[in-house]
Every structure is written in structure tokens, then in C-alpha cells.
Image 1 (tube, helix red, strand yellow):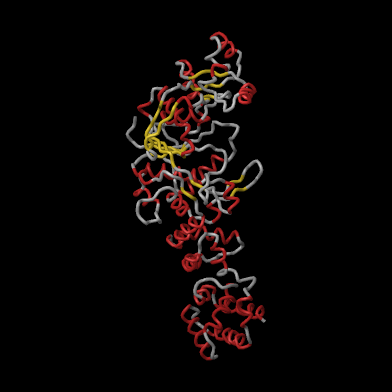
Image 2 (image 1 turned 45 degrees about the vertical axis):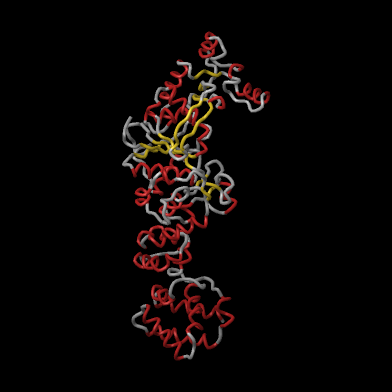
Length: 504
């Protein structure tokens, strides 16, 4: 077995990528990079009934957005391919047949109808040591009958032959020592009637052949562990078995149960990395990317769901996460998802990254909202001016849009109650003074404004808010003289004139 750390993420292409799935990717990635290892992407597409067109491409796009690039996989290639399980059918069948020949698995010819009858007849029916001898399989049928059924092409599955009254165990990297009573475990299907393997067989075979050293998966897979342990043993690969780590669940905000897509829809937040459009009905499930999250913030918040470095630090770059990550600091219990905290991470990252790094995303958003940007240098300045006011990237539409497109409505309630002839006169004179201003910059505009306030015997607070509303439409934005400077002389004058008409 290789000494090099090799981990894998093995999603099924059945729909959107849940944030729990991305966290599994992240912990795999961090562990691999921390130890100078390889991160492999393997597509588990053996369940053809659940396969969804476009889902594999969506998963790959999600990983690209997150910056979690596989070292091997369906796109990157590698010496252990193919990395798509549907292209490995012959490999799985070989090992399934080997298990049958050694008595460690068996053919089961029961029809779905026969199994339904058993379930109706026997409460909590399990196809295992208690009932397998009452059913139609190669353990109960004569050898010549089994051969006849096989020769005639009778549909069958291959099931693992689980022992009874044995205790099997392993040491989980997060949970410590875990043991199971095999009597309580049913004979899981290893190879389905369509020739495709189930997850149980495929994951063991692939992890062995791809020399996986560490396997990270959600704790919901813990009940499957005894089947996988037996397969490693039955196939004679025990010494090559990867070390397992079963990650804690991401819980609903109230802590009652695993976070689901329905919870996101009910409570108004995404649970997928990116928008997922269901090809069957066209229903779009929202994603963090489209809601306005930076990938750095998304990764950061996921890392903190179930892990910390033992300090009060909360903001981590991917490089810092690689450096600090350790499985010893992963919690045993589930982590509640807090959307307000998630937004806080995003706001902190918007503050942290430079304006140039945000330019492309902000330009895309403004363009999509019919706000034309012709000057990229000006856009970068504006982003730098307003980014501390943005929680989501989508906030830039409001916070930056008015620099390029004048307001179409005004917060009249903020201005009208205290509006009077004296203030209208102030702005009328201010327009004529601005027209004479040669150097239209923040300091000059501010100096002119304050001098006129003093000349007219007003207080600066009397006219500052109306000026802001004239320029942006509401009570928001950075320093008002910075806004005017970036908007430009002609546009500033035009906006004051239009607002004066609206205020009358």
C-alpha cells in the first residue's frame, strides 16, 4: 500500500450539491494538502434510476467555484481510472463472482413481489441470517437449480453472506473505537440485477484499487460500516483498508435533525453550493454562489461547521485552513447551521479582499441589472468605497449602482417633512456655484457646500441629507462628497435639478 495520503470525494450525480457534501470535499482536500497527498474525484453513477443529466457537470463546476481542484478524476485523469463507476462494471462483477465462488456472497433470485410478501408477512423483515433460508437463493436451492436459473437468464442479485454472532470493529478517526454485532446486519445487495454494483461493493473495490488511505464521509454512513468491514475482510484486503472518519451532521438551525433542502426553502436560505435547475421540471433550487457569497467565505463558513483550531480565530484563508486543519479538532456532535453567521462570514470576506478581486463579479451583477459601466478604473474605486457596506455581492447593485445610473425614485419621507423654500434656494444657488467649479473633486465640492451653508445661515445637517437623497435616492451610501466627485459635475447637477422637481 502506498504511504502517500490519498483521499476521495465520491458523489452521486443525482442533483444539487448540498453544503454538507461540499464540507466533506473540503475536509478531504484540507487533509490531503496538509499531508502532501492527493485528492481524487470519483463519480458514483451506478444507480441508473436516480441518474440526472447535467448533475456530474454541475458537481465539477461547484468544485471549481470553491477552488477545491481534484488531483485525479474524470477531468484531471490519472493512473487509477476510469473515475466514473459506470465505466468499471466488469471490475465489480469479477469481485462479486469471486465472493460467490468462495461462499462469502450468494445469488438471490427472489422477485420484488416475493420480497414485498415477506415484508407484509414478517414485521421488520430483513434479508439476512434469520430469513435467508426461507428465500430463493443459492444457499437454499440445489446447485443444478441455481445453474439452470443462471443459464436461463433469470434475474438475480448478488448479496453478501453476513456472519452471525460476530463482533466487528474499527477505530474511527473522529469517534474512536466503534463495534458492530453482525447478527443485526442484513445481507446487503452487492450487485444489482442490471449488473451494476451497489455503493457497498463499489466503494470497497474502488478504494482498494485506487489506493485510498483515508475515507471521509457523513455519519449517516456509519450503519453501512459493518458491511464494508466484512467486504474488506472477505476480499483479503484488511491490511489495505483506509482509515475512516465519519463527519458530524450539519443540523437545522434549531438543532433538531439534519439540514435539508426543505429547511432552506422554508427558512429562506440556500443549502446548495450553486443554483441547481432540475432538468425534469425546471424547478430551480437556490445556491450560495447566486445569492452573492464569495467562494472564500463559503469555504470558511463550512470549515467552521464542526471544526475549529482551538483559538478564537474565525476568518481563515484556504492556505491557513490547510496549515491549521487536524481531525482531532473535528467535533463529534452535529453543527447547527446559522444563516446570519454565514452572512457575517461573507461580509468579512468582502471587506478582506481587494476591490480589484471583486470587480468581475460586481460588473456582472450591475450589467445583469441594466446598469452600464464604461469605466473599469472608476468601478474599482467605487467598490473600494462601498464594499464595507455590503454583506452579499448582490448588495453592490444597490450600493454601487447609483454611481452609474441616477435614482428613479426618492425617499421623500426622509426629506419632505422638513423641506422648505430656504432649502430649495440653497440648492438652486449650489447648482450655479457647481457650474463654476473648475476642479470637481471631493475636497472642493465639500468646501463649496460648507461655505454656502454658512453664507445662508443654515446648519449642515439641514441640507446634507437632502443632498444624499438627491444623489442616491435614499439614506445610504458612503460620504456624500465622494459620491458627487465620482458621479461627476454634469450628472451631479442633473440629479439635483431632477430631485428639486420631485421635492416640490
